[in-house]
Length: 224
Ligand SMILES: Nc1ncnc2c1ncn2[C@@H]1O[C@H](COP(=O)(O)OP(=O)(O)OP(=O)(O)O)[C@@H](O)[C@H]1O
Ligand SMILES: Nc1nc2c(ncn2[C@@H]2O[C@H](COP(=O)(O)O)[C@@H](O)[C@H]2O)c(=O)[nH]1
Image 1 (cartoon, rainbow, N blue to C red):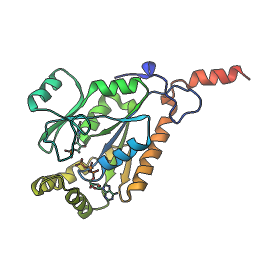
Image 2: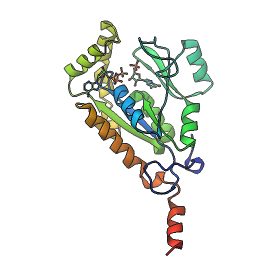
Image 3: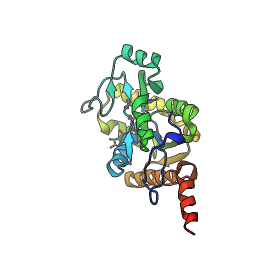
Image 4: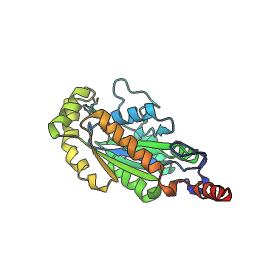
């Protein structure tokens, strides 16, 4: 993983030209709580944020685009990527395999860009083990169980059996909420997006992420 020393310049949210290293912003939740919707809104409004596009062995849903929503690959190709250590993390979720390709994330972080992840608790634990300092994790809770089911149903992209499987797994996913840095109950979408933006802004300003701060302060002091 890139470290503070190889972070490039980025000024998003910072005064002047203070260099900052990119961070990994993870959203997890039970299926249907709203991660994808919140992620899209974040990407629309933040030019310094890019999405990590996962590989998956699950079938493409109507409207999904290869390379944008996921890279849809077969299990053989997935295993090859695991064996070649090309994934930052990977997990089996709802009977399919998902993983985060290393290359694009490392390139973005090196360029001082922040990367947004829509991954489950297993993947988040793996990122915490390999790069805790660069990780900011948010758990999204639905406002209620019936509302979660309603969202999965009205999304109209999964079969009744698939929705039942995801509802049955919701408890398991939710039991990991306390492992996350932040927790948001996604009642009102606008409020949830504002909360995620606030977290990102505050995390960007963390002293340890502003790797150019010492030089900046030295320059200030020299001028006194
Ligand atoms: N705050 C909200 N109020 C009402 N509906 C919402 C809200 N947030 C998201 N939704 C709707 O809920 C449905 C599920 O949202 P979304 O696909 O973003 O969930 P997800 O957490 O990404 O699910 P998955 O893990 O299966 O990918 C969508 O139809 C979305 O429009
Ligand atoms: N550990 C990982 N989990 C991932 C990744 N990409 C997606 N996911 C999670 O899978 C479920 C189901 O997603 P869906 O698109 O089939 O609805 C959801 O919880 C995602 O967060 C990944 O690369 N690694």
